[in-house]
Length: 254
Image 1 (cartoon, helix red, strand yellow):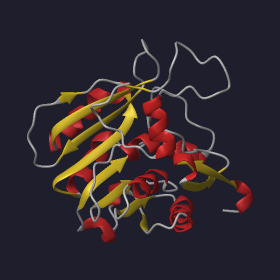
Image 2: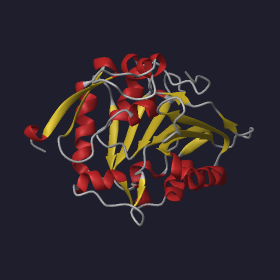
Image 3: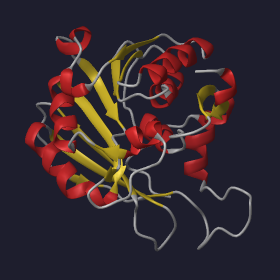
Image 4: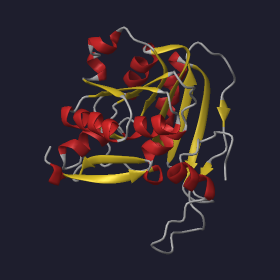
């Protein structure tokens, strides 16, 4: 991919610099919130399923030094960018090109302490496909959510955590899939403004762990009833997560 087809964007207040395609799907705040939710210790391993250009994994690795990073990405040009982005940010990340529905041999027999994913959000029988192939590959679902969860659960070590970020309207099928393979489920809604319904959520489960389901208070992302100027209006907690590499504690709400 030619350099003039890329942009170089700052994440975590400039701690992470990401080159990504100028056209098509572009990483925003979603992978940053996902990365911030990872509860890991130095030396543990993290697999990012559908890692794209590496944004979520590299944000997690920057916040948690010593985390062993692995990514699976089916678009070869994006996988190559993930490798280059890791090098530019001084991090080691193994990126494997392949599809989770035909797990590459390099991953088939391995297990991980933590797995994260930001699967395509939209069912195409009820929405309009994107005009750009790369954006459509990232946003339009062609592999059922249940398959994403099943594949991920098989790659987890006992006690390991799986965390997805997804749209709120997909929660019924997402939680059903998680409950079929994992326990100790925790749900964290991401609420855009006070009084508004959550549009995004984080769902975490653990392999071979039994605990009561926890519905946490929503994390409030923006201050005020509406966006009134060009300036950012993130709440203090949301800003700390996005700009200062703070963790996303499921117990915090404002």
